[in-house]
Image (cartoon, rainbow, N blue to C red; front, side, top):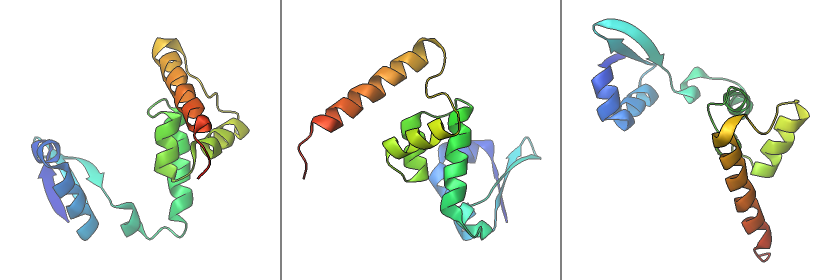
Length: 120
């Protein structure tokens, strides 16, 4: 187990993540007090890690922390599949406010662009 302070986490996040991957966990310290634990998901030994990633992506989307596109990438699934999954769980696909509307328009623009591409 390693301990890093917040400054180390900010200045070299890749190194801290590498430490979490090689060790069991990394303790993030805030003014000499443990604040958080960083654990590499693969180190947890979860039997169905892909399902855990999907559940995390859905939860983060539901809370408004990530976009549907980001959630799809996080879950390693196509955007259309993520949208179907979210919709099947009764999760609204659009949030409230201008930012959510702008994001929805941008995702629709990308989807239209993708649909116009010729089949490979």
